Length: 103
Image (cartoon, rainbow, N blue to C red; front, side, top):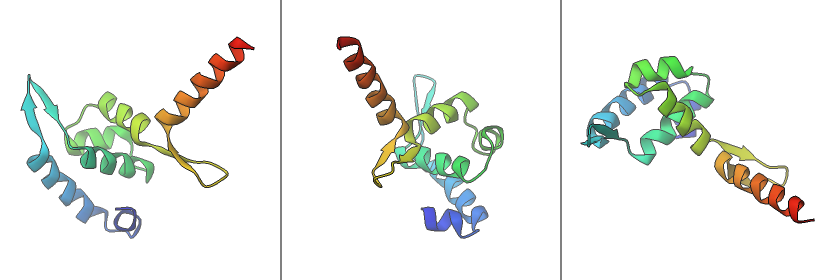
């Protein structure tokens, strides 16, 4: 996925994502369910510079939903080359805060 996004074939990726949206979304209780792969691809597009608003318009997804996906699926590379999601990092921060309270 990264190789495709970074190689400048954004229109191809856009078409693929449009097709994924059609194929992999289902209506459940008036809510659209997107595949995890689709969510990660939208996050990657955002990380490569596409604004939330543009992604929301192109893929018909609420801006707040995209922001939540970015928080959930964004990765942080640590100095020791460990890769963590932003959500895991937040969990570690909470655990550290709790440990400090006990000291």
